[in-house]
Structures are given as C-alpha cells and as structure tokens.
Length: 248
Image (cartoon, rainbow, N blue to C red; front, top):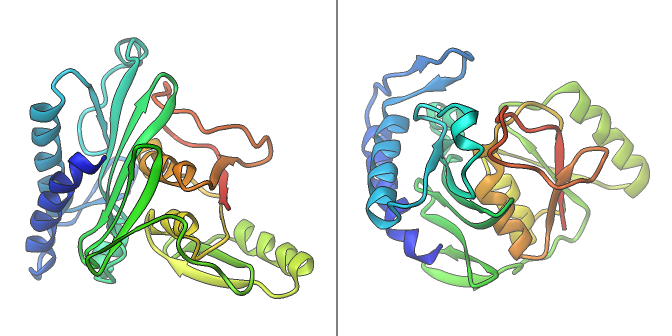
C-alpha cells in the first residue's frame, strides 16, 4: 500500500481544509450516523485516485452507493474505503479520525493503509509487513511494548457489555490499563504494540475494519469474531460486522 500514501495524504489535505472551518456541514444519514463535507470531499479524492491507479478494481466505500450483492458477489477483489473513520471524533475536533483504504482479494484482506491527518500519523502494509510513520520516522511493526495489560476502547461507543467485559479482565489480569481512543487508531495501537487488546461489542461495518485487519495481521496480531474466533469476512451481502476482538 506504499503506492497509496500520496492518495491518503491528498484526502487528508481536503479533510483538514474543512476541519479548519466553523461549519462542517453535518448531516444525518439514514442510519442516523453523521456525515460531513469532509467525508464527501475525501471520498471524492480517493475514488478518483483509485480509478486512475487501479481502474480494474471495484470499490466499496461507505460514502458511495453500494452496488447490489448480485453484482458484488462476482468480484474476486475490491478496495474497501472509509473516507473518514471516526466522523464523531472529527466533529468533536479531537483529531482521532482516519482515512482507511483496504484491499480485499481472494477472500481475505491483503493490504491496508490508515492515515490520521490531524496527527500526520500513517500506518500501512508493504510486502507482507506493517509500518508506522510517526513524526517523519518510518518503523516496522510492532515497535512498542506495554508494561501492563492494556485495553483500548471507543471514545464514542463504549457500552455496558464492554464495561462488564473489562471487569472480567481485571479479575484475570489484576491490573488493566484502559485507553479511550477514536476510530481505527485503536487497532493501529494493537498493531504497533502500544496496546494489547480491543474488544468491539457494538455495531461496525466492513469499512471500519478492512484496512486495519491487513495492518494487524501483517504485524503479527489478529482480529477475529467474538466467540467463534473465526476470521471476519468482507464483501458480504450485509456489510455489518459481527462483534469481534483484536489482540497481539
């Protein structure tokens, strides 16, 4: 995914232009989730770039019309795109939002790139490994280590089920550090080693996890369905994910 670094940075430029404004043009979609002018601007950049660079690969994006499954089920590969993962974090102006692009091929996520424009923080896969670019320094993942068992949880979607699970972890590990983080940055923290565990016991969609899955797996970490520990699936008829967890 090294070849898409320029693409996500271009999307980031458009996002930050709107981030600097007072009015984000917030609207509610049919599922009551928010969308902003920045989501739309980033989606436009990404779709245009992917069509130029990879005209033969179809695209499944949160902010574009989703084609009927009768057509999508014929695909053997596709890009899965979230122009802004963490739109609620964008609206809160906390910087914890990302641009996500993943490549699904032959039934699995094979490549991924995630960029947090407000932090200028980049994660991507390349030749079977994962990398982080932080403060201009590129490092192969994992590159950090926790001192105590560290769980990451959502800033905007922490629920009772997750809190109950946290209590069970405290019984098992004694001390559990919890970090509240927005967007796919939670899974990036598992990939780079700055966190150990992320349970997601609430709704997500394929574009929320696709890029992160590739980055996690290439770093030696994993992301699996809750309970069954089976691999997450992509380009499904219903693009919602089951509950899952990510861990090192």
